[in-house]
Image (cartoon, rainbow, N blue to C red; front, side, top):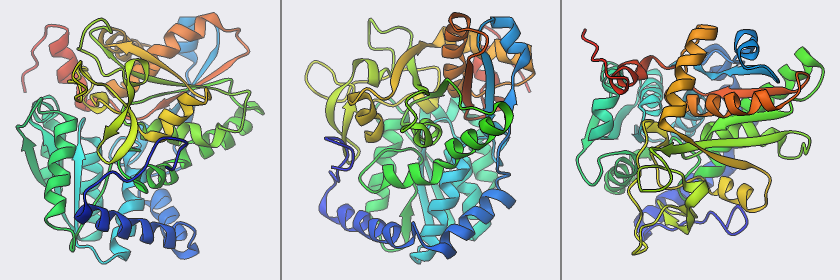
Length: 391
């Protein structure tokens, strides 16, 4: 296991061989100066890093209490943190001689980022997406196709992120020689959770440098949304050995924790295996993976990255469930106070900050990792509020 009792490589033989190939390549290049220099070049010149750390004075004033800063991952090329990891994995795939990228996506941001990298590096691209999410995120579907990707709408099961992963894995198993499976979150068999974290940890590294520059000290709290957990582990990792910094992951409480219409894995999950890893999962009474529900396609997942499961197990990170309504209210409040519309995934982190900030003194600092922008969600949120927008 890679993270205490969590992690591992729980995949069948043919896929295990391909996973081992990825593991060998990652181990070879993760500390290679030429590889890292190229990765940093594309982060800087293509993805627009470092992303800004913005002091949200209007939101701070509206809430009272702690000062709030926003880590503006929404300003990255393609509009989310996803591009960081995608560039790293795509460069690795090129070094492995692969000619095609295959990926899953929920909210569509990882799919857009993967299609973008495929266009940049001259590779074929295939994105698997649950049919429900295809409807919710139709703008991102068109963006992927515009970039040259083939989008596969998955009709199995609940037609959301879990089924998209299942479908992508099955397709990959038949194309192992030519295709690289580019996982979008800190999930899956080893080395994927570690690899995604290594390519996303730039977020936390920048937060630390920027915070020391702006405030001459570390923040008191960092909050990030957590579905599979890539933006959260990216924001948290550089602070794990900083006990003065409180780390909070905000997951999808959906329509409430009393029934099945949520994706609160860290709150209600149990140890189990999903998508090649031992982690925390939501299960039904028969021990099967439970159906999940969230207004946020990107958090609509019945598992969590194994490093997050470990961090909860050792008590280093807190995890809280945010309801759909709380997330939508946060989506609206940040838009109205700062002129910044967050992704509905990121709005879960904003919602936790809205609760927490008034309880803290005014000299305390909260950093919210604003993992993506909300253009893709506007129609869906309008529909949630009873309005139908027409083009």
